Image 1: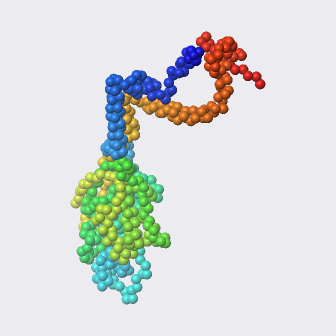
Image 2: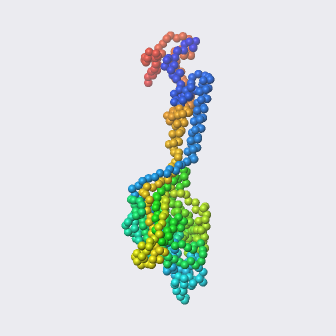
Image 3: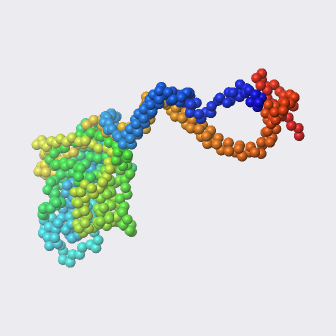
Length: 541
C-alpha cells in the first residue's frame, strides 16, 4: 500500500538519477579522443566485437610504448655527428709564430760558474773536464782560488746565454711593412729561450691580413749564429747535431710545444710555409669528451715561491691540449721533485741544476714515453693550421756578394747561417670541423608524437584529457568518500527534523496507513514549473 501511495518521480528527478558521474569510465571513453577506447568501454555487455577492439587497442598501445622506449634509449646514448664545412672571410687573424734556435746556449756567454753548476746537468761534464772545455770554448782557464756562487738560477742562465732576437734577426717584414725585435716576445720552452711573433701578450692587438698568398704574411731573414754553437763534447740524448731554427705555428690561446710539434728550417734555404686555418668544435659530455676549463698548475708546496715570475706570456686562460699537458707535467714535477721547470706555470720554485739532472729530466722523459701519464681531453674549441712547405736555395750566385757586403760577413758565413722564412695564408677561406648532437630533445618529442598519432591516435590534448579524468576519479572516489563519512556522522542529529519535513511535504510517506483528509502540503506553495511543485517550510521566529 505504501508502494501505491508513493508519488512518481518527476522528469527532473529522472535526469538526476540516470546521470553518471564524470569519473565513470564509460563517460570518459565516450568523450575521450583516444582512438578505439569508446568501442571497448561502450554500453552493453561483453561481445566479440568489443573483445577484438580491446585486443587492437592493447596491441597498438604496446607497439607505441615499445617505440617510445626505443627512442628514449637512443637519446640516452647521446650520439653526435661531425660536420665539415668551409667558410669565406674578408680577413683572418694571423697566427702566433714561435721561433727557437736549435742551439740553447751561446758559447761566448758560458762562464766557469755556469760550468760548475750546470755543466754536469746540461752538458754532461765532469769537474776534471772543465779546463779542457774552457779551452774548447776559447776562454782562459779558471783563476786560482775560484769560488762558485752560493745560489744558481737556470732561468737566468738561459736568459743571459741564449740567442737573442736582436742578434739573430737580420730583416723583418709583415705584409710589406718593416718590423723588428720589438714585435717578438720572449718565452721559455724546453728548448730554452725562444721568441713569439704576434703573441697578443700584455693586451697587444692581434695582427690580421686581408689577403692570402706570399707577401701578405710574415717574412723574416735570420742568422743561426753557428759560430756560437756549443761544441759537442760527447754523445748523449741531449746532444744537438743539427743547425737551424725550430718553428711552430699555433693559436694565441695555446702555449707552444715546439720541442714536439715544431718543424725545422735550415740555413741556406728560403722556406715558404702556406697555411690553412681550421677550426675544431667539439661537444662536452655526455655527447663528447671535451673540456674548456684549464686546471690550476699549483700543487700544495708549503711556503710561497720567492723566485722571479715566469716570463712566459699567457694572457689567456683558455683550455688547450698543450696547456693541459703542461699543467699536468707541472703538477707531477711539483709532487715528485718539489720544483718546476722554468717554462712551466705555477708558483713552485724553479728546479736547480742538480734537481733537473736527478729528478726533473728523467721524470719528463718518462712522462713523454707513457701515454697514460697525462690524460687530457680535447678542447671544446681550438684552432690549428695545416701547413705546406717548399724551399729554395739561398743565396744565389748573383746575391752572395751583395748579402756578404750588406751584413759585413763572408759569403761562406751567409751560406752556412742565413735563412729566410716566409709564412702566409694560402687563402682567406677556412674550414670548420664541428660536432653536433645527432638526436636532440625536439627530435625525441617529434618521434614520440608521431608514434602516438600512428598507433593510438592521441595528441598532447589527449594526455590532458587523461589527467583531467584522473582528477575526476580522485575527486569522486577519494574526496567523495570522506564527504560521505562526514554526512553520515551528522545524520543522527538531523533525522528528527528531516522526518518531520518529509511528513509535511510528502503526505504519502506517513508512518500510519489511516487515511486522512487531504490537507495542503505546506503553508505556502509556489508554482515553479508545469511539471512539479516545490515545497517551502515557513518558520517564524
